[in-house]
Image (cartoon, rainbow, N blue to C red; front, side, top):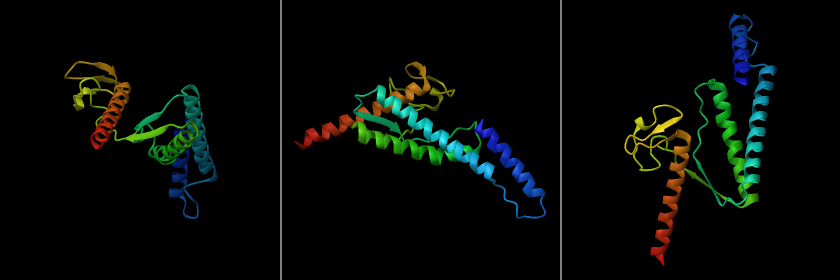
Length: 174
């Protein structure tokens, strides 16, 4: 709904600006700026609410593994994408860092490269493993699973492999 309002308001302002002989009119307006402030407030409130609730319910977490996030959504406007990406990502990272200090867990950020194409069961990587946004089917072992769950499990597996490699190096050093 915010996206629709912003796009409509901006297109009306652009039309007025183009038709105006007096170029003192600005494309942006107070109403538009207020709308952006509302979007930012909504994003901040929702991120805080969701993360606070999650860590209240899950108290014994030692490590949080997240992918290096990108909040791009093709179905919304470039302007709203930019707001979410720049503002939302910062709020998310700041809140996660704050909660990690309060609750005592570690945040591990991993590279998400190919997690949407890699099978969490056998490790086979192929862009055709994920034909749709929601479904994953491994062309090697045949595992069928929700694509987001597969990606999450692949990240977890990578984290565990990284931990094992680190522990092996420590063992060798002793």
